[in-house]
Image (cartoon, rainbow, N blue to C red):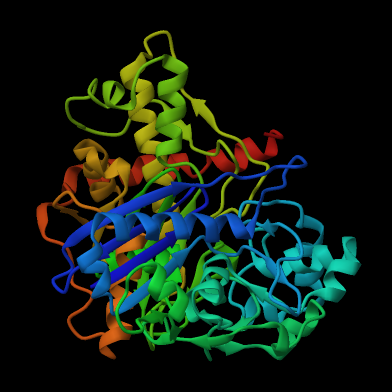
Length: 483
């Protein structure tokens, strides 16, 4: 039996799988986010641990016999969160989360002062990353900074509570900007740029390796016989990739969730900092990955649904089929954009609305706009040498056949649609726990069964390529106009 723990921003989820990776039980506990100032986003680290205890208590209640046979536990979590501990392992302040924007000034200064953030770190210095958050603490809370003995990512604080070990996996740790990502090791130079050294960092392990053993007292609490290993685990997107079997070079998935992600596995470190591509280590050994990220995917459709006082399903139901691009253009920048613009200030807009524009046309425009933004991601990945011919579709938006047809033709790739199931980060975490318990990754990360594969339609690919060329002109026009 294997447990996957996913420490999300809004909830902690635990799943229990058997040897065949079939779901035995699951539980969820909600979390809250504090926003003490505009642009800030924080969370109490001990709330993660309380939630983990809640969900694991629930698994014991639901499946005591299966819990007794647990051999491995895997961890996943939201990336980049700065969790500062004192020399006794106690949090010194609330964790500064991935979506906290306070460190914009520090980002510009760090990138100018240490160009190796772009080369060794392989990513633009953005407020979302951990390094600039610590620089902000260093400048604004010097007493806290001076007392900081250890910096952990959210899931790694949970690991510490589970095992007593300070450890982190490669995929999550690459998102701190303190790693030499190609070498899969901490960089002394990048740490020094923010006044830190290796002694402030956990030891690094691969995501599929053991990082420690569950404490005896916790084994007793949850009725676990023996001493299960706790795997290195992975950052949320890398763990999700493990959940859908995207672990071999060239394998890819597109996630249509609140935000949108185009994720591709690579056999080498392949950055494209100019295109705001995220290039990180993967959660399995000797692999890396790239991500293009857009900030408003289903969020765009949900916004339109709320504005028109209809459900997203009602809106997409207005469209029978797609015979070409919408006559209306939509830029899905409701909260800024990540890839390829790295622009926190840009905002969304429609172009081409007329007297004849109705709800169906606006919906079509939103579906197109999100797909165009994903095409931007694909273009940015291509600059870094990545080529893909098929992707697996996951996330709530993947339930729209129409949307997937647009994406297939626009990106000119085959879109594989899995049989309904949970392919989230908790599944990937459980699989990593399975691999750590067995000491091998062989046969662990299978791809899900498919219910359909959607091929691009050549005629649509041609017309959408023309529309994309026109759509690309809108961002600079909108930016020039001050929006």
